[in-house]
Amino acid sequence: MTIQIPYAAALAAIASGSAPPVRSDDLPVETLLARFHPDHGPRARVPLRIGANAGDACHPELARLLESNALIDDLDLARATPLATDVLVIGGGGAGAAAAVTAARQGARVIIAGKLRIGDSNTVMAEGGIQAAVGAEDSLQRHFDDTVRGGHGRGEHMLIAQMVRDAPDVIRWLIDLGMAFDLSQDKALGQTLVRKRAGGTTAARILCHRDFTGLEMMRVLREAVELQGGIEQFMRCPAVELLSHEDGSCAGAVLYDLERRSFLLVRANAVVLATGGSGRLHLQGFPTSNHYGATADGLVLAYRLGARMRDLDSFQYHPTGVAWPRHLAGGLISEAARSAGAVLLNGLGERFVDELQPRDVVAAAILRECAEQRGIMRDGETGVFLDVRGALAARPDLLERDLVSLGHLAAKCGLDPRTEPFLIYPTLHYQNGGIEIDGDGATAVPGLFCAGEVTGGIHGRNRLMGNALLDIISFGRRAGARAAEARPPHAPGRGGLSHVHRWRRELARAGLPADLRAPQLYPTYGNFALRRGTTDRGNP
Ligand SMILES: Cc1cc2nc3c(=O)[nH]c(=O)nc-3n(C[C@H](O)[C@H](O)[C@H](O)COP(=O)(O)OP(=O)(O)OC[C@H]3O[C@@H](n4cnc5c(N)ncnc54)[C@H](O)[C@@H]3O)c2cc1C
Image 1 (cartoon, rainbow, N blue to C red):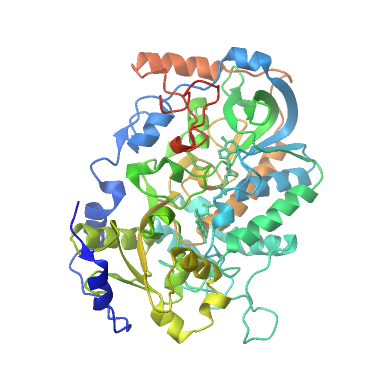
Image 2 (cartoon, rainbow, N blue to C red):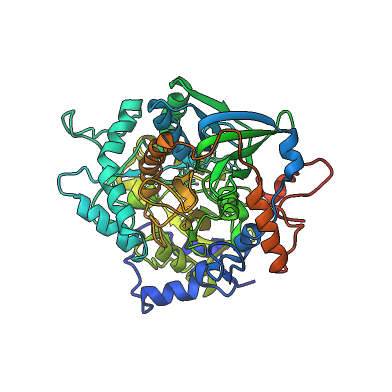
């Protein structure tokens, strides 16, 4: 274990409370990332051996799940309860809800299936806000340029341009659903949305609801799903496999009803996969900010059916996860705190990075401080300080008005942020890569659409704060609209597991084990098994 500076000594080093200037640093950004960001470490990638991306780099733990066997067989299908719909939406977070509401408004019969309850998701946990270039000094071009630059030039320009153009209308759509955004206190009503700066951006473009924007967004989306006619909910019914036609197109999905412990076979003209991210895989042993259901299920299901993926070796480690106390490790402290003036300090009391650099740069800078023994050790936990004292002194009402969640978190940590800094460490936060889509969320597999964190290409290899909440509504609506228009090329009643049979032959040819089964559905410590008495998830 690397030796760090003891907590008491580090506290003494920052006793004055005034924020020092940022230490001048000799490491160019590319070197910093290459040496300290987890995406670049020795255990960061392996080539995939089978499937549409064979030969491409993938994180080893994700590769293990992607190259696994299905959980179910033909016999399970024979025993399943059959259902039929026009559009099946898989995932009850923001992207899924937006897709379901949009498809139903176009007259499609919709089933929305979720692993947990509707709204149990990363969306509901989002804090900082959503980007939209609505300010007079801002522009769509600046939003586009910031997003391209933030993603290290690796995002798809067409997808980014479309999302950025959608943004003002997305905000209107959310307001129409009833979502409340923070309003300036010092201006006349009208054109008064509060706008904040996010890391890596050139304009104040974050719109928010205090520091629990996702909770407010999911509140109105959940209500919209409930109130919109034509949507049937199947919650606590995770998708365990997709269904295919003989030609490889998507025909629906198999759900597992956790209450009745039985399978449902849902045939659909189109499927929208909106299963979110993969933080609960705890890649490289990192803690995570993600909700309990973020186990990469959508990636596993789509890959087996033939969808193409991208950037599967690129993840976002949010700079400010809680490091102490241990039981809260990985919990998020929103970038909103740094936007409001919180600073990062090492064990010597030095400010070692501009806090509003893109997240990968700030996370790598923190990991560097810890690797070079300028981190702080408290009760066995390592990190650096996030110091909000200066920001709170300048704005005494900050916790009550803007950073409400931060105040609650401080209480849970048992500290007073007016006098004591947080100990923080990067936390596994976001899946930058995912399933390749076109502008309507269509994938390489006919009949299969995707939206939200499960997709790749929009954020390149580093997402900016606020662009995920925008992405899920922009692409959720588009995917829902296109899915509602899909007409089945096949007679109803067809569809099965032919892709699974093909996949099993590929596994055998590549010498890959048949006893590793996925999707994983729950974190390994959830001790979940689809069949009693077995351990049939990705971990044998
Ligand atoms: C703590 C936190 C704070 C964040 N803050 C911000 C922010 O301020 N601004 C911003 O832009 N972004 C933020 N993000 C990122 C953003 O919230 C997410 O990327 C986005 O909400 C993902 O939406 P989604 O609909 O794609 O996935 P989710 O919202 O995660 O929804 C996925 C749903 O799919 C379900 N599911 C998973 N597997 C299955 C299965 N096999 N069968 C059925 N259902 C399944 C899940 O249970 C879940 O309900 C934050 C993320 C976190 C974790």
